[in-house]
Structures are given as C-alpha cells and as structure tokens.
Image (cartoon, rainbow, N blue to C red; front, side, top):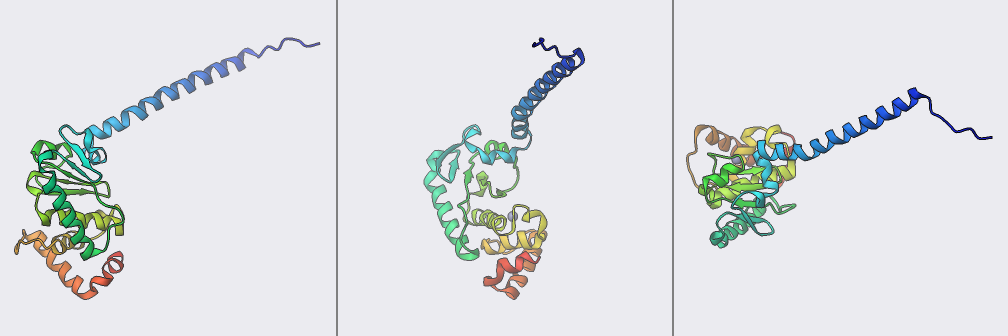
Length: 210
Ligand SMILES: [Zn+2]
C-alpha cells in the first residue's frame, strides 16, 4: 500500500524559503550584471576605449583606427603607420597592433576621461589622441607605453619607475623638444644614461629587473 506522501510543514517552508532566496539572488545578480557595466561606463571613462564607436561622434573606420572627423582619416592612417613602424624598429615588433582613437574636439577627448594631455595609452586596450596630439612624436610616445604594457605587463606604468616608463617614452619617441618640463627632462636624462649602459638589445631584459 502506498500512502500519499506528505512533506512535513517545516520542510515545505524551507523549500519555499529556498525558492524565494534563489529568486532574490537571481534578481540581484541580474541588476549587478546589467548595472555594473553601465556604472563603469559612466564613472570610469577610459573604459570607453574598449567600445569607442559607442562614444558620440566617433566612428571606427579601419580595424585599428577610430576617428571623430572622418575627413582626416588619411592623415590619421599615415600617423598610425609611420609610428607603428618607427616604434617597432626602436623597441621591437608589436605583439598586437594597438587601436587608436583620433579625437578632433575636446568633447571627444573628455568623453574618454582625459583633459590636458596630448594623448593617452590605456593598458593594451587603446590609445586616445587629443586634438593637439596629432603629431608623430606624441603617437610614438603612446605606442611606446603600449609596448611597455606588452613586454612588462599591464601594470608596468605603476610598477616600474617613472624615469624608465616616461623617460623611455620621451627619449625613444624622438620627441623633438630639446627641453621638457623639469620632471620629464630628468626622467629622459636618467633613462638615456641607463639605456646607454644596457644597450638596445638588452632593453626589455634589463627593464624587467627594475
Ligand atoms: Zn608618457
């Protein structure tokens, strides 16, 4: 004889409670999954280099070039190609080609969270160029930072001494300015002395020890 099985009331309550708990967790997780990227997008603007075409006025016109003013694409492409070649020759070939975003208005540059600089590299995610940053040495400078993150890790800008990261970028970008502001001038001089000592062939191997 089979008697109908009745779960004790206490057990039912636990199951009901579990179901409600899971629902709550799902609702919370859904909010987190939906809201965290939106919050990051809104609050940490450099993350926008990951999806530049979502920024108002920016179009991605080639695999590694996004641009605000499409009529200046040829100029941007030339800056990109020349800098890529020059930096490869100076500090070794790129593992991956960097993505560049060329802004022509301060609004565009500000939309990525940047303000006064000429250009900015964001890890290995991309390089944003300001309206005044359309100069060969500024593009080379940021591509050198990109190479640093390829060779020395994403956090190299924070873990390596500034005289190395900035000094190298100012020096090996062949920045034409004879005199920089004190801070960068000192970084560049210190890097030049170090670089002479280690030699170009040992650049990355010696940089790892810093
Ligand atoms: Zn720099």
